[in-house]
Length: 71
Image (cartoon, rainbow, N blue to C red; front, side):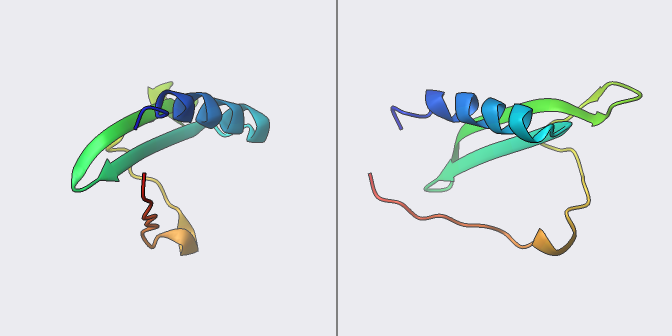
């Protein structure tokens, strides 16, 4: 968990490189949210911020993605 500060930096680089207008990321470990990151807009024209509760169409990748790691 000591490296979570790098996650925001990596996410920002990804967002800028791919010109993503809005992005939200949450990392959960053992049932607890240990990191949250929101960036950009859900609606650029209205400058509505993209947040954890923003609903967005993600088409066929709507299944949960789970990663299990051991520190």
